[in-house]
Every structure is written in C-alpha cells, then in structure tokens.
Image (cartoon, rainbow, N blue to C red; front, side, top):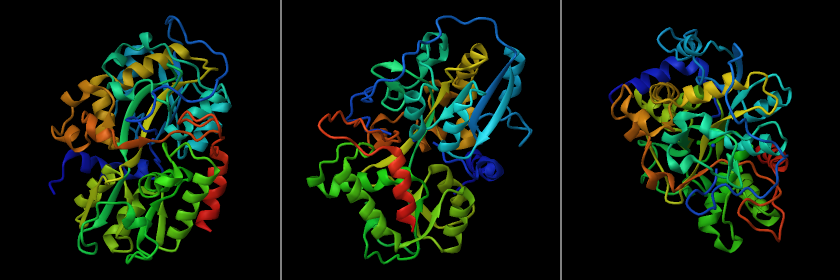
Length: 401
C-alpha cells in the first residue's frame, strides 16, 4: 500500500493517540433523530456573541487541538489564537469517563465529547444547548450528523459535530480464510482463532454484541444496540462472556493492536480505519471490512459547558474547528471522516474522503454511533426500563474476568 499522508500522520502521531478512544451511536437509519427519551435540566442557549474573553479551556481527545508542540508541521491552534485573541489551554483526556468528570469541575469551557459521554453531560446539566446560528460553519456540516440522539434532545442541539468513524472488522489475510463478512468471526464461541481474537476495551463494546444479536437473535427484539432492557442486556453480556475465552487481548492502545497484528498474536478483531492504514503502512498483512450486520461507530461533538467562563471564545473555537481547512487537517491527522462537507476539498490526500467514506450516506446508514445508555430507552419504548451506562461499566469488569 502506498504510504499516504494519512498513514504518515498516523505513524508520527502515535504518541498522542495512544489512548484516543475516539470517538462514537445510534441507528441513524432507523431511529428518530433528536429523541433521547429524557428531560434535561432547563438551560438556554447563548443568544448572541459578545467580546472574546482572551482564553478558552478545552478538554479534547489527543490530536484534536494541535499547536505544533507535538509536531511543528501540525498546528491549527496558533492561527486560531492570532485571529480571535483566544489563548487555547487544552487538557487531553484518555477516556470518556475522564471527560465527564472533568466537565463537572466547571473549569473547562468546551469538550470534544464522544457519544458514550454526551447524554451524560446533557442529563447532568454540565453541557448547555448551543445556538447553531452563532456557528456559521455549522450550515456545511453533513445533514446526518445534525440533531441526532447522541447530540440533541427533542430537536434542541447540544453540540457541534466534529468527525466520525466506524468500528471495522480487521483480519490477517494470511491466517484468516475465507475472508470474513460477519461479526460471527469474533462471536462464534467455537472460533478456530481462539486466543487470537481482539476486542475493543470499553463498556460500550457491549453494544457490538447487541448489534450482532439484533441480526442473529431476532426474538430478543433489539432495535437499538444502546437501548437494552434487562433481558437483552443479559443476552449481550452472556455472549461477551462466551467470547472472552477466545480473546487474546482487549485493546485501547492504538500501538498495541498494530503490534499484535504484526506479530500474529492477534489475527482478527475490531479496529478503526486509521489503525488499518497504519498497520498496512507497516507491512502487516491485514484488511478490514464493514460486516453484513453493520457496525458500531463514533461521532464526536464539541459541547459547551453550562458553566463556561469563556463562552464567546468557546463558540469561536467550535466554528474554527469545523471550518473546511481546519476540519480537513484534523481529520487527516487523527484519522476520521470530517463533519464539514467542504473539508474534502482541502485534504492533502485527494483520496482521503473516499477512504473514510466522508460523504457516503449509504455507508453510514449501517453504522450505529455510540450513544450513552440510559434508563429511558432511546428506541422510544416506554413500557420497560433500559440498562444505564453505570451497569454497563460494572458488567464489563465481570466480562473481562
């Protein structure tokens, strides 16, 4: 494979991407956008922009707010500071749970929240509704990222979409035959790849099992992998406990998955497009596929704190980070599809948006973006309670033994 800029960026950026659990969920094809099934605290969006405050405090995934300190050639913060007068102070977070905790302190103005954190921030009142009219570049954000159930409530927007990616099935082309087309390759308890299966290390991975059961166990009635009643949840947990005997490693470290596939310790499991690119650039014999059942995925949203001390700079930042040129830079460096449709005109690799399916609406219909599980079922059922995230986290510990 030709080593394109994306792969070079991946190789150069591994130090800052080690714990980037990026970024994801809902069934955008089959759910009602903006319906999350709960009533958040009564907060109002800012009506107008005032004078910028001179600084902005961000919580971000590694690689989202680069100022040249990691790589002198990678810097979209300095120009923002020059143009707005807002000094950027960034706290890099390694997990969604860390982001939620940091936002509760009131010390930060904005956060690049993934879907497994965003509803928690909305429900707790830590994230404020946003006035998208104050973000001019919002008009160019792809339609299927706006007002979705992980970033809005009843049509009220709580954030500015940043980028997205799918969780793919990666496999060693020399060891895995025939080429897999289904997640059964990792969920079959009698897998011939015992000890060499890898899976994403996060409670949100329970949704991957639920998505598989949605297709293979229709009697469970799963509509949305993030809206699981107790019976559905127990079935997903049971499947993952069965899978555990075949898993050689649960990964959250970007480098470790690449290393495991290069060494042959892992031959099949979940991955991201950027990891696939980097592994192929390092001559690992791997390919990846979006399986027949679809996949889970991540969509990150810049959310503004309800306690923001620098809200005007925060709004300026959200508009900057999704501006076409900057959104293209971030997407290529991090390895994700940009949210701004015009960003594809500015990528250094002219095939980048094709590789990442940036504007392929049909592709994303099969990707179920991470959404925080809550008791009020996001699939709109009202006759049962769904299992909330805290119990997902508890179950994940039990699954891994």
